[in-house]
Picture 1 (spheres, rainbow, N blue to C red):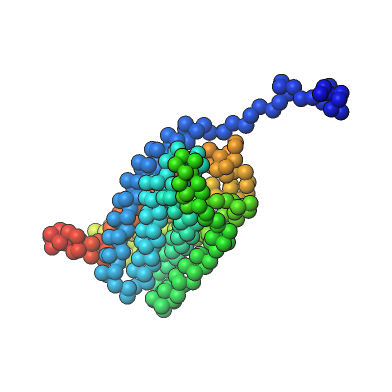
Picture 2: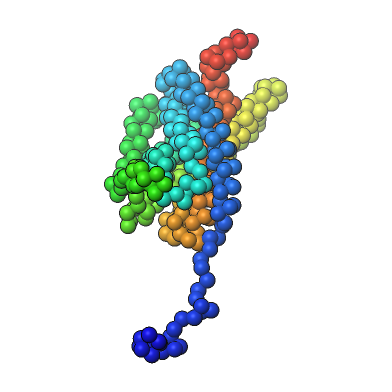
Length: 350
């Protein structure tokens, strides 16, 4: 059948020269795979393993210290959230391999990782709220030093944390409601494996849920942490200048107090910088995914770039959750003393 018999004119028959070029990935598969091996399989596995042990130590130390102070409750909750995050990141580092992303049926460990990823996003959101709560508490200690004990009580903090956890876990219900787990036959060995199957709307629902469970809390908490940190630094500097102008204490004592206040300022600023630096990559990535639905792993043009963004973001989470023990040792004298008594009794006696 020629063009006239088929009802088409010769000019309407597409030629090979007029065909659109095939869509290629913005980032090559080789670059994505190399970054995955280095940052996920090596760096994140090492940092995440250390983070598991460090956060277990944090929880043990704070339980030993007791929950008579609100800071012990919030920091224990933050350590538990970091511990859960590190466990998931280690599972991700141990199960995720470059060749698995193109496999028709992914291994069971990757299926479990994908299923738990949504819950992990909610836990990350909880960590953001707790960090913001800690920053707010420090600011209130400066603004209302005589009334802060009556404003922020152990009971109120416990209730607030419970409400935040319930809200965070409720935000991921839509994803699990649309999730489909089914047995898929592997073409390699004809075995049926449990695998995660995306429905027509599940990808978009997962992105929106991630935005609600992780990105919104992180953006709000970014703002709270930055504002509280700036306010705290300003107030501490004002207090130091006022005391220097009115105090009759010896210069040596004033110098010692100034060093202590400078250490507090540096510690709070460090906490703020670590939190924002480590959470920003994932927040930016999820925000783009929500605003631009094509920015997803399955897209033929943007897919590898989205994967690279997440490959960079998750090790940052591992670092943020792992280094808290060093911040606590430097920031809290009581934590340091309890830590030394439990794990380094010889140094504690010295």
